[in-house]
Image 1 (cartoon, helix red, strand yellow):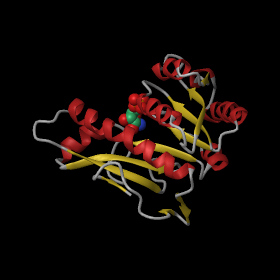
Image 2: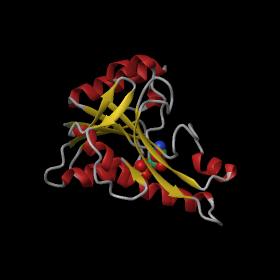
Image 3: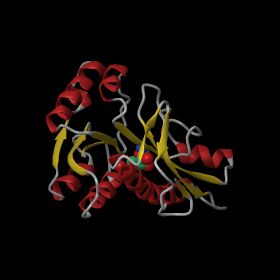
Length: 211
Ligand code: GRF
C-alpha cells in the first residue's frame, strides 16, 4: 500500500510511521510527505529519510477550495492508497474529503468522542478525567467524528501539567498510529457500514491499546 502523509509541524508521528514502514514485511510504503507549512520540521526529517516531500502552502491560495484542489493534485501525483494525517492542522473541504473518503486516517490526541478539536490536554486536565489518550480514525466531513480504527489510553497522573500529559499521550500516539496503519494497510481492519471492524483480535502492543 502506498501511503502519503500530511503534516503541518514537528512530525513525530510521521517519523514513527516512516521508521515502522522501513521494517521488512510492513504492509505499507511511505511514498510522500506533504506539508501546508514550508517551515515544518517534518519536511527535514522526511527528506533525511529519503522520502519525497512537497509543500502546498495554504497562504498562497485565495480560498479553502483552491488550496484543497492544489493539495489533491499534489497527492494524485504520488498515487497513494492511503493518506495519513499526522499533525495536519487544516480543515479540509467536504469536496476534497469526498474524493478520498475511506482512504484517509487521522490521529487525534484524545479518546474520541471526548475532546474533539484543539487543546485536548488542557481540557482533559480541566475536566479531571483519569484516563486520556489518543484515537486513530477515518476522516469524514465532520471534524474528529469519523469511524474509530483504534484507541490507546494514557493515565492522567496527579500533578500532571499540560506538557507532562501531552508527552505521555504522544508516546502512545506513536505506537497506536503504527499499529492502526499496519492493520488498515493489510486489511485486518476495514470499514463495515459506518464502523471499523477488525478481522480478529490482534496482539496489541500495549495493554491499554485495543484492539
Ligand atoms: C499530535 O499530538 C497529533 O495527535 C496532533 O498534533 C500533534 C502532532 O505532533 N494532531 P507531531 O507533528 O506528530 O509530532
